[in-house]
Image (cartoon, rainbow, N blue to C red):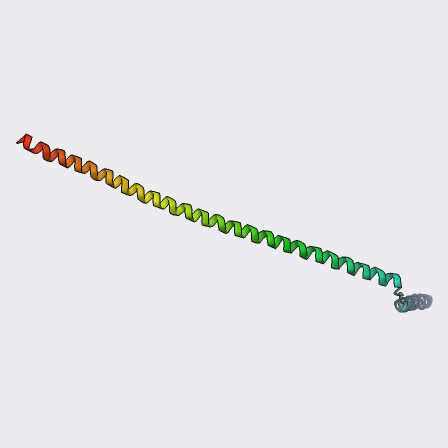
Length: 123
């Protein structure tokens, strides 16, 4: 019987603690934090600072875009220069083929002329 009484007293203490904690939680949730004018001003300053940072980032991104466009046009001009150099090299190669073909033709003509000139002497 003594243990039964201890259990009841223990349960009463437990119920008392639970009740007190529950009331603390209930009153803790109903406490309202006032929104002051200082908080409002701070929010306005933060929004202004964020907007100025956003504007600065946009201007820098536009500057980067202009730089990329300038680099792109420079690459295009370099590409046209390389294409013109390639055409000049192709023309030089073609000229070299004609010159070497002419030299080879002259050598063949010289050998043929010598052979035909030496043929009566061999007879």
